[in-house]
Image (tube, rainbow, N blue to C red; front, side, top):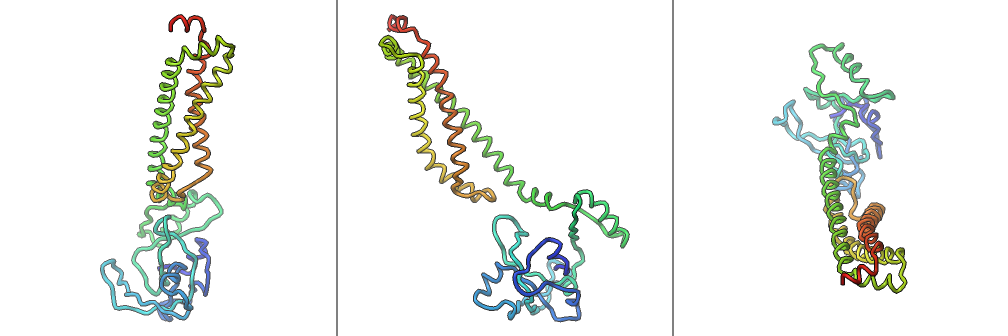
Length: 280
């Protein structure tokens, strides 16, 4: 149940027909407006302005309904996700004065800071009737934040797990490369004894680490697709494959792998060939 200024206040575009007017009152023909999703699901291929919807009349109580009443469709508005941000839902709006309700919400559109208008709106309401309760005032930003609160928590949880996994992977790469270089100290000493410079030894270690990291990234892309599909159903506005995000994450992982290989590489480049050969 909405008043005529509802659509203009919230910037809801009328796709076809008209919005409610002050003439749509208790003594006039019962009218209704539906959203585009309602038309696509139930009135596809027909003119919605020539149709009527049959809805049981509400009797000022959630559990009390009256006889079915016909409402003439006079307008179609674009889809507004008023129940959530994940998907569209069929909606039917009727004029407030043709189906009044004991409690109501007030929408205010302002060019100033919405939070600063709360006291002014409350004062205007209490000036009309001091006994009216003005509860839970919220701005549209607060409404959106409340709706996305669970998604935000899920995102923080995933990001925390990702940070821990990145740290563990860096430690694992460092450990593997350090062990590999310790096992190959004789080979590295021979290379240096035959003329390999310290820079070439460091480049060799980094190149081997980059190859291993690239193979891991290739396999990880396969897993990223399935993880992306899971996140698509868990988070709002997240696609199954976000190529920019995947490229950024891949770059971070590659840099992390090279950083984990750098310290063992420096240690290998700092070997003294003769000392290493004597130990072997």
